[in-house]
Length: 112
Length: 112
Image 1 (spheres, rainbow over the protein chains, first blue to last red):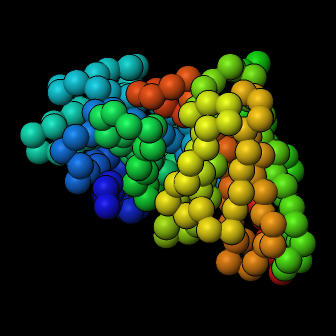
Image 2 (spheres, rainbow over the protein chains, first blue to last red; image 1 turned 60 degrees about the horizontal axis):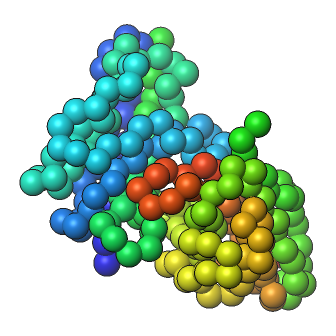
């Protein structure tokens, strides 16, 4: 059973701080990694994806991947109250059908 | 506007009464999936489709049926709904393997 683990939180950070969200996965054959943001009562929205070891930056978001340690992280710089949401990590293995496994999500609260 | 459209948004039904939740995407995506989301359990995949007439079971397929007769549509059918199928359902589509999903707005189903 492929597993994707996230701390459920809530992770509380002050406005302007860096929020760090972590995700570990069990399948060493995983190749594609995604971060989704889900506001309460809304659908998940893709915000980042990463395929290679290292960092990938997009605006205030940075995804970090370490395949040797089997973890992927999402950093949110200059956190804003509007970033308060649940962040879902999704992982897809190499080959086969496209069946991403989702973590249960981490709740982030950014307080003014 | 590129989107995944689900209907209805809200549905209350009685045990055993067949229902269909429709899903349509206008992005010419190959892949489509149905998920259910329950508190504490996260997103769980019900069925997925990699192309027209190609469907397969996800993690929780019992009690559900799907069909993919056209590329754009992927309806979810509950032949005999039961209260344990009360949940928030999401349809999602993707251009192909290795890409993230675009989610519909969700259908909140209550079976009494």
